[in-house]
Amino acid sequence: MKIFTGIQPSGDLHIGNYFGAIKPMLEQKNNLIMFIADYHAMTSVLKKNNLLKENIKKAAAAFVSLGLDYKNNIFYLQSDVKEVLELYWILSNFTPMGLLERAHSYKDKIAKGISPNHSLFSYPVLMAADILLFDANKVPVGKDQIQHIEIARDIAIKINNEFGQIFSLPEALIDENMQTIVGTDGAKMSKSYSNTIDIFTDYKSLKKQVNKIASDSTPLEEPKDWQNCNIFKIASLFLNEDEQNSLKQRYASGKEGYGHFKLYLCDVIWEYFSKARAEYERLLSTNEIYDILNIGKDKAKVLAKQNLDKIKQAMNI
Ligand code: ADP
Ligand code: TRP
Image (cartoon, rainbow, N blue to C red; front, side, top):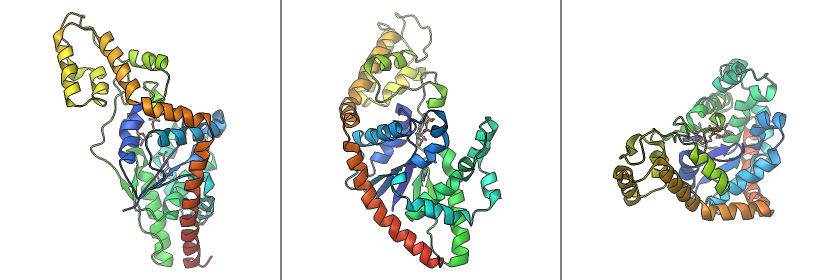
C-alpha cells in the first residue's frame, strides 16, 4: 500500500499538528511519499507577506528533524516536480465547474470575505493532479480535506470512463481514533485560534504559551481534579503510564498549584523535543535541507515522468 500526502508549509508547527498528523505519519517506515505543498500555499501566502521561501525551509527542516525517514521514503517539494502542472491542466479539461463550485473549503473562504481568484477555485484540481500523478491509493488527510479527495476520485472516474483504466481511484485515509489535541483555551488547538503550543519555540515563549492554559480556581492547598484539567490533558500526550500516575498523585496531594504543573509541563515539552530542536536549528542554519529535498526531487521526478508519459499516451496527447 502506497501512502501519499502533502502538507502546506504554513508557519510554525504546534503540538496539535505533531500528535494529530506528524507523529502518525512518521511511524510509517516505508512506502511513504510526502511532499511540501508550496504551490497550494501560494493561494494564501503570496498575498500576505510572501514568507513562502522561509516557510518551506522551516517545514522541511521540521519534518526531517522530527524523524522523517527521507532515505527510505520520498520527501519532495511540490514545485520541484513541474510535471504536476501539466497534469493539472489536462485534468482541468475533465473537471466540471459545478464540482468545484460545490467545494466546501472554497465556499468557506468566500464566506469569510476572501475575494475569490482562480487559484483558490482550482485548488482541488491541483490537489487531484498531485495524487493522480503518483497513482496514490491511500491519502491520509484531516476531515476538512475529504471532499478534495472525492473530487480527485470523480475526475479520475471521468477520465477512466473515456480512456480506460488509467488511474487507480484514491481514497482518503482518516484515522477515526485520531485525537483532537486541545489548545491552551480548551478548544481544538489551531493556528487560527491563537491557542497553540509550538514545537520549536524558545524556552521563554514556550513558558508564555504554557502559562496561557486555562485552569480553574481551586486553591493551592486543595486536591485538584486532573480529569478535567487541560494541563494534565496536554501533559499526558508526553508521559508514559507511570509518569501520568505520579502526576495524578501530585494533583491529589493538595501541595501544589497549577503554576507548578505548568512549569513541569513546560520542562516536559522542552525535554521531549530537545534533540529534534537542536537538529532543526542546525538545519535552519545551513543549506543541507535543500540537498535533502534534491534527493527527493530526483526520486519523485522519475515516477512523475513515467506516470505522466503513460497518462498522455493513453489519452493520445
Ligand atoms: P491549524 O488548524 O493550526 O491551521 P492545519 O490545518 O495546518 O492546522 O493542520 C495540519 C495537520 O495537523 C492536519 O492534518 C490536521 O488534521 C492536524 N491538526 C491540526 N490541529 C490539530 C489538533 N488540534 N488536533 C489534532 N490534529 C490536528
Ligand atoms: N490541501 C492539503 C491541506 O491543506 C494539502 C495537500 C495538497 C494535499 N495536495 C495534497 C494533501 C495531496 C494530500 C494529497 O492539508
